[in-house]
Length: 128
Image 1 (cartoon, rainbow, N blue to C red):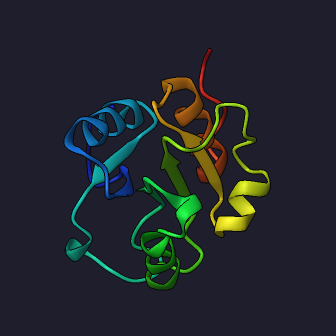
Image 2: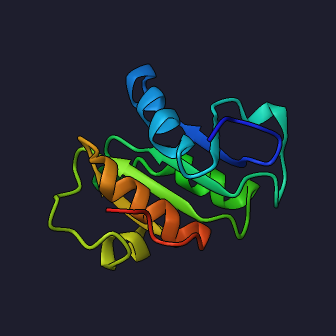
């Protein structure tokens, strides 16, 4: 699917260039358009999904998550971190403790990211 006005806007915060490009590529097939500049639009309802790269959430470095929850209340948030273990349930205890809808470990796996995005965006499950 090409990025169009009908695409679901996804805000990516704190990701390095390589991660942002992967997110852009992987989510495009789900009808999402990744943006990295929140100044283009703000307020509740602007984004369908927010993905925040948080390097050290266990050390209390969660300010970006708190800021997104405040600026975009009700918008689902996925937290990415290399400190999440692959065995952590995406919508389990760690997600609840951080106040997000899902946590995903880095390095990312396309299927895991797309499945989480589809679930949070209430899209049909992606094809295998």
